[in-house]
Image (cartoon, rainbow, N blue to C red):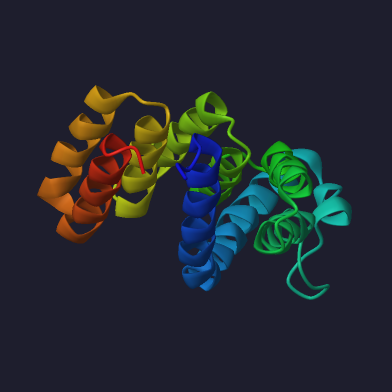
Length: 180
């Protein structure tokens, strides 16, 4: 029995969730750093009113961190629509955190929203161009979209900077071309 593209998307989402959870603490650190910078900027321009919404280091996780963590938990538990909403809420607070765009893109792939996922991967890459996983997953999304030329182009780019991730992408592209 042949697998549908959506089955492939679910498998890819499971893979990406594992990868996402592996780098979860690094993402949390990134979210905290970006949030601290945003809080400092907002506090200097608008008084300390932003602190009430986002909290500070003494009061526990900020609202941004709560949305990010909730998105991760929802994703881990297969609650993709809730995960999407949590990540989008986090981006409303601060849209300059690449890990949020990346995680949102992963969940959008799982729900077969490939055009949106590609936009989010591109935004993550724009914000953090040296993270190989962002490039690899963009290539995965192109492959799922049946855009072999862009997937192969992403593979060629990735091969120069991250051979392991490039090989993962190559294998995925090859598997997709075999129809299984």
